[in-house]
Amino acid sequence: MGRDEMRAADADRQAVADQLRVALEEGRLELHEYDERLQRAYAAKTYGDLAGLLTDLPAATVPAPRPAPDAALLVTASDGELTRRWLAEVWGSWVSVVGITVAIWAVTCLATGGLTYFWPVWVAGPWGLVLVFATVSGLVGGEPRKRAVRRARKEQAKQLKRERRALEAEAISRGELPAAPKKAKEPKKTR
Image (cartoon, rainbow, N blue to C red; front, side, top):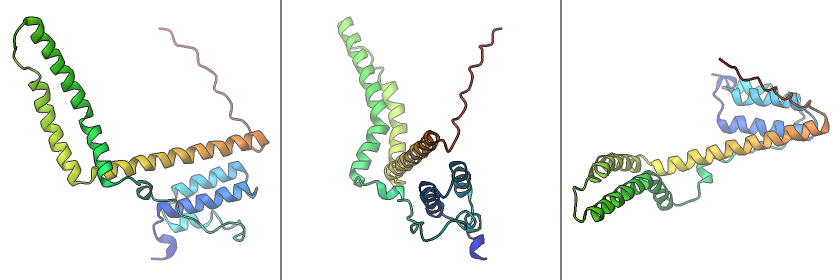
């Protein structure tokens, strides 16, 4: 199997995207050309797919590719802190609902002047058992860190999208790219 047939990693795609961004900033690519190449870079499956995206750009002006930081490295909180946050997310709604149902039961007892059947147990018990199972399996499977990494990746993706929109807006303001036509509102259909 040749290098061109080997699968490309996310870091490889990001490195090519960074090089394309530099070429755009230097004026070596027009925005529509950058956008087309960027889409091809992110869709690339193999090194062969990435090969032709940079061949017409001078290597001397393009800095060495720097891989995007892995989202797992962006999560700096300790395991204990991640676990506390995750447990608060998992159990937070249960605590709130059980607190409300117990408060309703207590008000009912005060209004009737005596203790009544403790019906909140039917809310707290089954739901609590499900959450105990989910908590144990989540802690065994490392879910607190996994969830933090997923959030970090999502935040990275949002940041990249904001940067791309800013580049597009800048290119539109310089006249390198036509402004996107505004969609006309369709009249509401009546029956």
